[in-house]
Image (cartoon, rainbow, N blue to C red):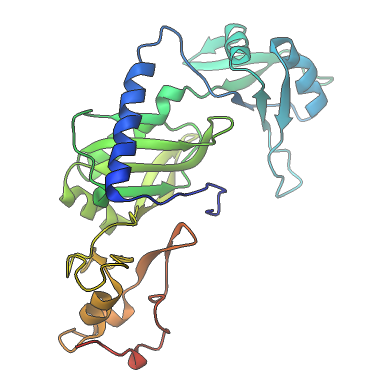
Length: 308
């Protein structure tokens, strides 16, 4: 389980390709629906200072049963937003029908003891905005797939894919990860580049800027690290059971290694000495992390025994 509470199940490259292909097929079917499909979780912002959960429940219960989720308050300042969790998706449609549109945003008049008909910003999440597919027939290559964490709530898959394509190269598939219960974005995404050079360019950059509330938010990109990825040096021959467990983040490497080849390439007799400071990405308890040193030996590189 990663830090944001997402449960990761690591699959083989073939299984991942099948999974993404099935996802693409399901997306095509849903896009033909006459009516939009929404997450049952709805963002509401611009709340008056004296807003309470009881007020929101009494105001929005006319659209159907719901609960109210307040954000964690890290300070005494009022956050000014909350989330409405409706029990059925139809309630979201009813809410939208009573909102008014201003500059492509939805607003609902909310009254409290200190404010009358204050426009509260309503931001429903369309499920179609969670996926981007440039070509359903394009092959899915897991080794060219990246993971992006900390993405803004309102950004869509198409917007992320467009920015990645503009900066690094064409994207064939991008998916924003959704909470299984509410189908609301969890703040992370995965995307697959068409070209190897585009993937390498993104890994060299490491960071991506995405729009959030009129400013640009800097988020980190990581390799997806499929569990059955073979080593770029030996093709999996040296560690058939282990395969590639590391991805070197240094700009001079940017490739997958098994444990044996990591040591040969970075600390062996033909290494130039700079590899000692290279850091690997690895899967630790299902989460991709950037380590200070390879996990299969201590951080004292002088004690590493290089297989001949």
